[in-house]
Amino acid sequence: MGQGRLRSALSLALAGALSLFAALLAHEILSFGDAGHAIIGRATCPDWPCPTLSLIIVGLMFKGIGAGLAFGALGAMMPDPPARLWGAGLLWAVQYLWGLVGIASGYRDQFGPDWRWWEPFAELLWHPVLTLGLLGAGLVLFLGLDRLSRR
Image 1 (tube, one colour):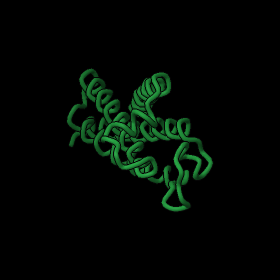
Image 2 (tube, one colour; image 1 turned 180 degrees about the vertical axis):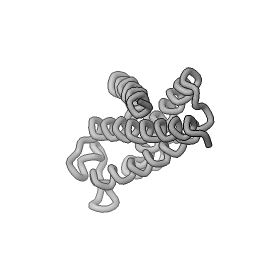
Image 3 (cartoon, one colour; image 1 turned 180 degrees about the horizontal axis):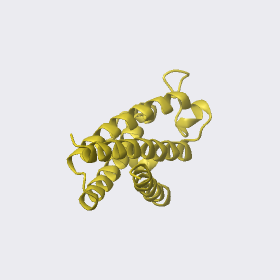
Image 4 (cartoon, rainbow, N blue to C red; image 1 turned 90 degrees about the horizontal axis):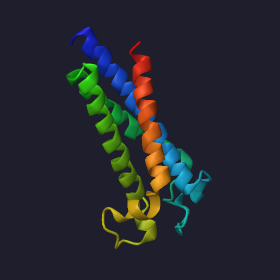
């Protein structure tokens, strides 16, 4: 792999992992709170297996690492900036929204088993201002980190 492709891959991997982690964590905390079992919000939950903030952070770190691998592969395949930024921005938006669906689905058991796959997201995490605002802010952070790391 050439030095340009390697630098592109590392830059996108770092920017994608950090910005996706930050955006998903901010969304989860702003939606559910940050005090231990209060993260569940409206749910009635026994002591275990309710997620605590530390468990949420570890899970989102792994999600960020997985995203970083995908961004690294994209950066290696598309080292040229115009197409690379469009592809990376689209991948970031899809991973952010799909990550929210995954987060909300983790709370499915505390609210009843009859929800369809998309209903936990629609009921628990979708907010027109918060979701779209963090999507925009996360994309700006992602592209800014990528630009900064490529200098």
